[in-house]
Picture (cartoon, rainbow, N blue to C red):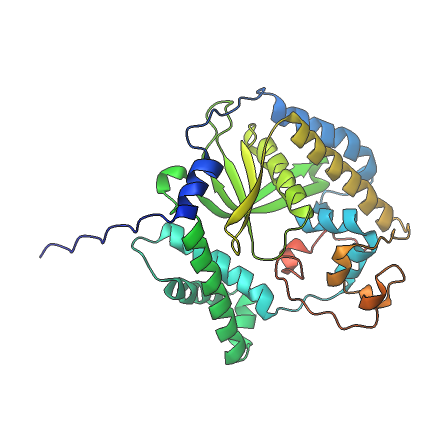
Length: 338
């Protein structure tokens, strides 16, 4: 008996069409870069960072992830407080892990599973992974909390499917793709994890689009996060991505930036500055405190003299999964405490 033919793919929504035309820009001209751009960026980083970590051993590297850079450039005190506060899994944190896993399965599975089916399968896969973090939490959490995660993750997946074009295998999609760059003989490690990368460099021509998905309010640091990813991708491949985008699932809108030498230079300077500040903290320099919108998620806001008065003596809750506490993998910024 012959198998039933697969149902036709649904027609793209207007937003999906707009994303394909304006963000993907599939017929647009792609820039080419000097073939030495990757080694030159690495050399600039190592020249500036090397003296800062000269006495560090490779088995005790300094780790820098996007959260590290975001916190230390916002308020050094918030980084210290974040490192001193034990991570506790919550519905908001688990929602992100489950939703990203569900999207990964949506890309790799054949057929057209429903969002809830994808979420259920994602939860099963995460539990089977025996990860000591989210796996244990999903097994031990109250049924109501897991149900809340299930519903929130399904909402994330529905919004992704409604607003983002269906990913084709020919686009070489990478979901939750880890990027790692070791510097200075392994004394410094730069780490990132890209929500979605599409395309592949062709020779020295940039043909990769990197996208970060958000559901909370836009933050200025989001663009800096993506520039950091572009830096890692450029050193890894030798060719930058052609474009970066922060995509809001709540609104179906995005903010994008095309890559040029100035964007990468900015990322290099920010990484060097962050390294210098981290080393200074480790050597005992008191953290510089600076008030800002990020105070709302700082675990030390209630006792910080620079925090807005309305945040003092208040039990802050994480109501924005994109800005609040994240999993331990992105909180580890070095094996020495600041």
